[in-house]
Image (cartoon, rainbow, N blue to C red; front, side):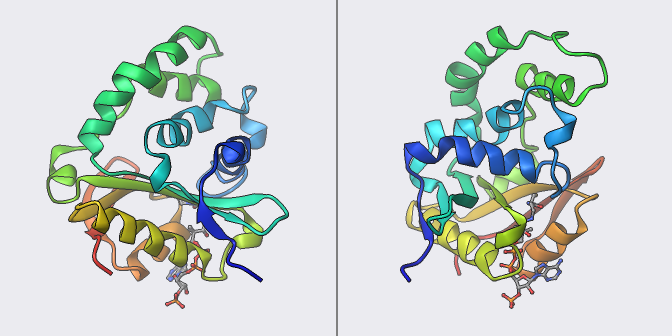
Length: 201
Ligand SMILES: CC(C)(COP(=O)(O)OP(=O)(O)OC[C@H]1O[C@@H](n2cnc3c(N)ncnc32)[C@H](O)[C@@H]1OP(=O)(O)O)[C@@H](O)C(=O)NCCC(=O)NCCS
């Protein structure tokens, strides 16, 4: 069988939004929490596919795309492009206050209107960042490692010295995975741990 790991293609977009939602509750399925199933993907998947598709890797065994890693080479430049190109139409479509206060939808809309900016101390030595999500049937088989290594190779080839990510402290499995792969703690802010490592494998 040929490798299921390949570069993203535009036809994968819907499947990636679905994977994001089905792993969006600290690694567990967040489907039941949202009335708008695409909202989470609009924040954590869409801008990467639109702005840095060459850094998007997917797992596809013919039964559908079941995992991905997404990257941004230069986090500050990415944040600025999102501000110009990605957030404005989403803000029009999802105004603040459109969903009940305290709902999952409202929390994501808040992020669309006030996107998180990576802390300076995190970006300084680790200018790139990544996201990774695999559906349960892909987990625990080495595919997370292969995706991360594939992305690190691309980031290194593009000249990035280091990559960071944010992970919730309520997702100890993911924290253990990243630490095992050589990521170390850069900063803790509230419930979020920022971890980073060199792009050189
Ligand atoms: C977290 C996640 C990306 C890990 O991917 P995975 O495919 O399950 O992990 P792998 O099988 O590739 O594991 C790679 C290595 O890490 C190790 N590892 C995995 N989880 C670990 C943990 N919690 N603690 C210590 N080591 C761990 C594995 O033993 C393996 O070691 P080896 O390669 O040296 O033999 C995946 O489980 C996932 O997508 N979970 C749901 C979504 C999620 O939480 N995403 C992260 C949001 S920040």
